[in-house]
Length: 71
Image (cartoon, rainbow, N blue to C red; front, side):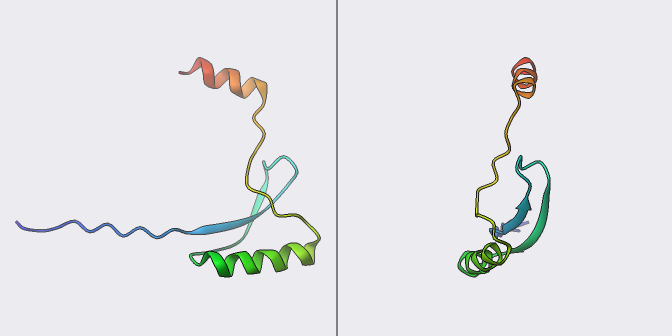
């Protein structure tokens, strides 16, 4: 009686190395401090000679049709 629920939410950021289609990925690092993660990401991208992009896999026409049918 009288117990209260406590919810603690912590935002975690993940950085992945992606292939061209974003279907394969490798986790490079994760953390809770966005500023530190951004600085580390910029250094890694510069060293590897790659760009920084948001995760956005392409969806094929076949997948789109399958998703529409299941609704």
